[in-house]
Length: 173
Length: 171
Image (cartoon, rainbow over all chains, first blue to last red; front, top):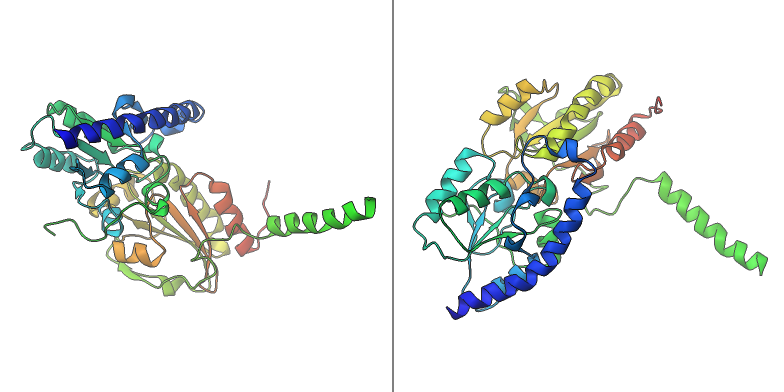
């Protein structure tokens, strides 16, 4: 319980920053709206309270506190080059295979498990993977799901900032 | 005071002009030889970067589900058609998890250049592809001329290509 509260409070702080950034991004999205609508839904449509900032998650990953379950819903080559330690690759949330693997991986977990989804394939407002993955977990009844707010991409907003990374193929490969 | 101001202004102006004349440099991989690779493209043919030495190469890392990638690819198709005879060769490296959606995409978008499915080792040799799309402009000598992350400004890519091809902008 203690660790879970720690995660929630840090997340709450992060959300303040994340919501502001998201608001700016969503406002910016209004300009090129027609082109961004092609291909996939924007991640910006997610519940604002569900956002967590990279610096907040990095702090949690570095701490000795109980870690959330972290799923990478982007692409395999990105994961193999760099991923958040102990995160699990499930595949693009924009693909049915990725969603199926996410559901398979999450199903055994208690529904109040702290879960973080991240991608970083593309700028946040163009990411096709986060929103479907988020909806899939909500559909399974999960109540504590956070979305890592990666504004530009995983390289710029996580790796380049010196946050913890690991390399290598997904477990089981 | 006036001569002093001029002496400060002239180097500044010269610096600005120089910066405008040069491509946007700064990435570690820019100016270095493009890492060689040999893959099998989605048509089953060998795709070897060395084959294109002497051409200006636009090497595009992308994925079928990546919205910014999808936006810019029709431009690459148009550039291949327009500048191919002048020495441009576009090459696509898909980072999809499998080839099947890439084959479908290539047909749907009428890709007129070779496409192969890449891997993490190749991505790392190009300095890391930690977001999509990433496009490299490679000069005729096989050196990386510029790297473009995010696909937000295709005109910058086009400018670099035209500069290396020695073509004047028509408009």
